[in-house]
Image (cartoon, rainbow, N blue to C red; front, side, top):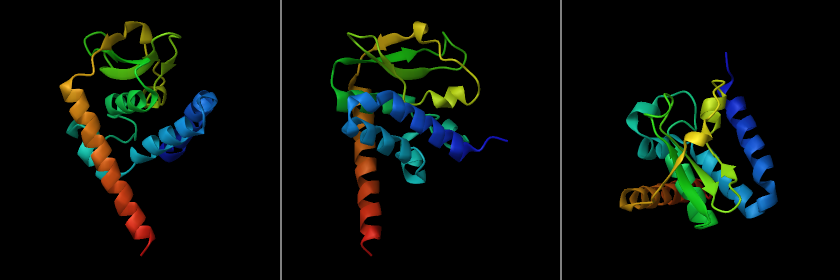
Amino acid sequence: MIDVKKAFQDATDHLVDDIAALGDDVVNMVQHMRQSMTLPTVRMAMVPSFHQMNFYPSRGFCEIASLLWIYHMGDAWDLMQIRGTDWSHGPHFYTRHRISGQIIDITVDQYSIRNLTVPYHLGQRVEIDRRRKKLLDMYLNVFRCRKNEMESKAHV
């Protein structure tokens, strides 16, 4: 039986090691993003219902995590998608740096825990359209509310 909490933390630690050279602010942002994936209120607000009962925390967060990466890191990063018609385990979203080609996939562990390798060569750049901007705004609002709630409980 897989220890989901440990697997999720190990994946977070591995991701942090991969991005450490980008600075403490980036590492902190990713750690907070990954932690929020485990919060029931965030999960209920942000994840499609068919993923809400899934046992693994990052499942269902690939699009929003990628949008948040671009929001924080700037437009040097592209939003990439592997369509469900191109890969039986898709759709899947991740980011790719426009110049270096570096891939950052904040939720890759939803596949690696099942011993699946993400076929990044199938990815296609997609636009950050109005729906995706609305999704990002919604997440930022949910996360701010949750953060305020946690801070007010800490002061009680």
